[in-house]
Length: 633
Image (cartoon, rainbow, N blue to C red; front, side, top):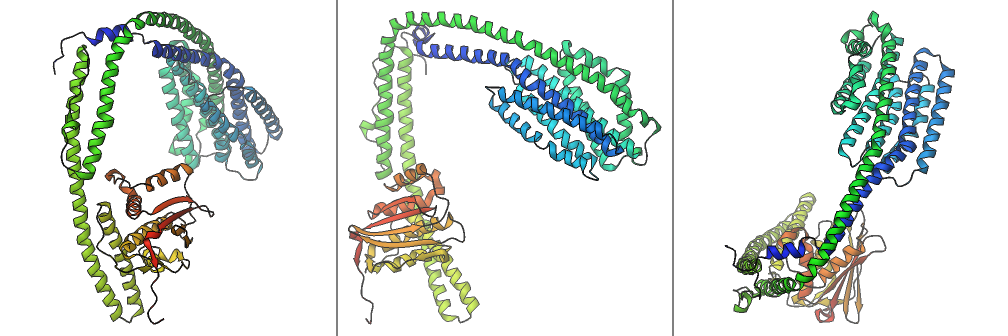
């Protein structure tokens, strides 16, 4: 649609809404606060390093040393004093870490989660030590026990390096990966100690060592590719060093199949190769971590400078918005208010009334329901919007008419199919009834009763479709029926009828025209109680008379519902609900609501003393009659 000639709203919006007063103030405050939080988070990183990262790194160093000492003790049976000393040093380091961590405040949720996980892993250190002290432990289990604690510290590092500066985060993450590669190197040294003491490699040890080598080399390669020139240099020199190349050859030799039968001669130098590489890696890691920490403060200062510049510019923009908005807001506001009122009247009055009327009566729209919108305006864009709303109105009316026809068509299909099924099921019940009378074999009779029960339930589901289509089921009674027979009939239409106990009701009867609907309503509620309660629990039906009629309580022992859910369900049951095809999983709720509204029955749900639900069905006195006397009495 070509634009209408007139004053363009773009100019007015540019002047009035270029820097909208309230929204810009909020946006400016939000942006400044968000940026300030980023800067403060960066400044807080130094505190986290002092209280968490550095003490945690000392824990890793001591655990790596204790792991190596434990493995040496397991393989040689010597070094008890060294292991005892190392354990005491590890315990002091852990105690210092816990003390500093308790003093740290304002931790992020991620940091809190990972710190809690680290506490849990530190609590498992005693179990690992008991394995070392026990006779005949598996060295791989001991190595893995220490490794799990160290892995938890690196997960805490991952949460710590989640800084808003992307470049700084990449470098910090790469340094953390180098630290993980360093710990895997420590695990390899421990496993080499085990292998040298035995003189050969088992299949499990070779497989574990192969995984360690692959992981260490992958972490090293990935981290090296992400480090910038300021941090990569020492690591590149290490890769080309003789110590690194010697250890690579040692790794390849130990991964080979030949080590399953015996170790090569050069295996005697593997501990030395590992110690040489360990010294260089530990030095590089310390320098890289120190280099990363030195970058945090300048990055935080840069963010704070940006806050000052952006905040000053934002404040000037806010002042400008005050000066230019007051002049033009009234005129454009009146035009937009007129458009708003017209659109609201269209959406909430015309279309809503049309849809409601079509759902009930069908037919076509009335002239007053399709009157075009009229808004007084000289702004081209608003005139275009009015025409667009009129087009939307025509489309919406057409869609509502089509939907009404579709709903009526679906209802007819429901009724047609349900009536056919109802006829077939009725014939099937008659045939089953005859077969039950003709047979005397208990097993066959039991099977026929099961088929009879299944068919009865199928008939109820067919009647549900008829009820949802606002039609009456074909079954009916002219004379009153005792309420006890109505309740038993409802129970018979439930799959787990054995769990339902009907307590003796008062001697009253139900008028004939309400028997089918009340039995169907009760069957839906009883089945819901059996479905949402434990299989072996009981569902009780209690009946009592009241001054206004008869009250039936259905009580289960399920998990129950929250007060909010109960209020929502009771609100739906208080009125005749409009059946929505999109909520097909709540057919029973719609059926109960329709039947209750048809006979002025009140259904409410409430908590049960047993923890489940209690459905209360209040039958008005108009549906009750005196119970007919039994014949022969």
